[in-house]
Length: 72
Image (spheres, rainbow, N blue to C red):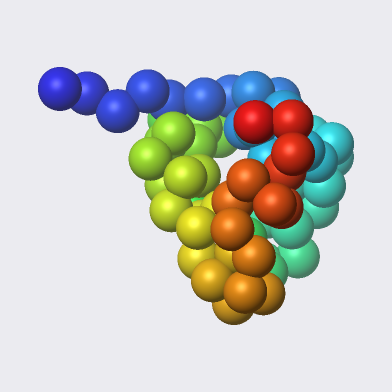
C-alpha cells in the first residue's frame, strides 16, 4: 500500500495553516516542522507523516487530536 503524497496546499489544509506558513518553516529550517519530501523541484508531504506530526504535537500539549481540531 502506498502512502498518499500531498502538495503543500493540501498539507496546509489538513493542518489548518496557510501554505505560506509551511513554506516559511521550510525556508527557516525549523526542526519542528512536518517532514517534507522533495520530488524533483516539488515539495510533498506524506499523509501518514502529517498524522504522526499532529499526534506528537497533541501529546506535547496534552490535547487529544479532536480537541485540537474540532472540525474533524
